[in-house]
Image (cartoon, rainbow, N blue to C red; front, side):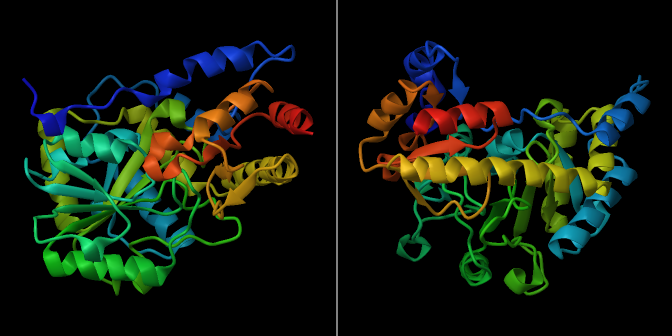
Length: 363
């Protein structure tokens, strides 16, 4: 029988089902802004790379091809100002599986605490529970007691709020963790989608002082390259930690398919499709945000990422209901922690036509 600390919460999205039915009943159909699922085409350069590598009868390597690791290192250097040895890049089956299993892969033990932001992606909590550890949602590291904290998650830009943590804040987290021997894992899946603020990686010299010791950065190609269906991500940082993860993942058979690795390398080498996709999201955001504000919602944070963190002051479920009656489905802020009970998360990952439909309905 599972220990109480490992008991998993109910899958939150199931609770949206009745509101989804309401939104679907709108005469012009549903505008689903609840889940950040990409809707735009996979870039041609990526599809061509996948096709060219499709005759792949042998097993892929857990560590990934040299081509992929070098492409990832090149992208980090070119786009984020981060320098890593390609040997310290490890492909993952999307980023969610790494988030969920990282505490287990790092040997976090029952009784340990895994810390993550007060408002956060639910899988940080789930990952702690899978390892039998105690999940701790807090933005106040200094208030934590003497109990062992082997792993601290940061997420900038944040899901759900779109908040960007400045380098000085991240630097303090790194210093705190290093004093206690904790690993800092930074979820940077939205790092190239800065709008009013420019996000910075935990691995940037301004944050880490040029040393990646005790640090991991998690990256995903789902949103930036429309590869959610490919399950394409990677982790990098401290070479010793990456080697530790690699050894465990070899034993567990956690391998990214070879054609997907080829597609990832192509995506990471090509900046043109990224700029095109950024422009699409920026245009949708520019239409949706003022429409929400005119309709009585205040937008908090949301300086980056693919979501608007919105409130009209009511309980989040009441806001979900009001919008569902307009045929617009959004996510209640409560999904991301009790502090979100007065907000809703609104994705900008719908087609131009559906975004325009939402704007019309909000008028």
